[in-house]
Length: 114
Length: 111
Image (cartoon, rainbow over all chains, first blue to last red; front, side, top):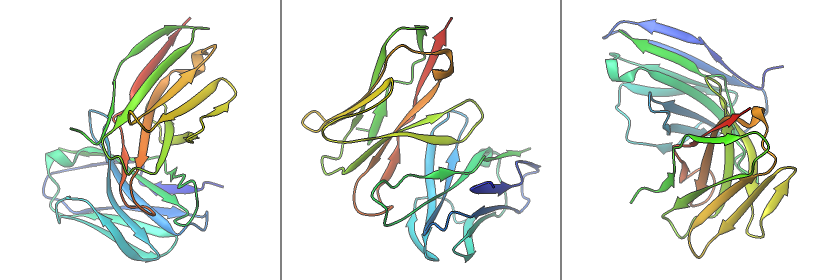
């Protein structure tokens, strides 16, 4: 069974469109994250949710909105897509109270905005 | 000064050699440290945690130097399969807050 899954794996869309990326974890973890990895491979945290509460919100445009229907899901919705949004988006989860804070990553969603 | 810094490389190393690289961090209050590995076009995966006393896992040794604010990763008897990008992770503050990834060091093991 896949621990952290994301859909879709590839997403090609035009500027101005709205899109969503879904993420699910079956590890029973309390915290889920979204990361963006740009063309320079820099991995930057965007959001995290702990028990359905946003606990980190980096300075990302408000076109990006995380939505968590339950503890096992954290979806990422992006409005009015721009060329600069092209990147790989990784979902991850961790046990918030765990001593190791090990993060389990999904396989990534490669977003291309044309 | 950037929060977490790594030499991006690439480090080209012959198979069987020993290679080491460092990661420096700026926040002296940082509490937890990790090395992650990321293969090309794959997701990052935890390689090992870094403890104050240092820790070893097979051919891999991680060390923490709080005085100089850096962590290191040593790979002995390198294998072709060690080729990857190694990401340093530093956590400053409790819980999931203050989690920062370095940009990674690209390692290429050559036959």
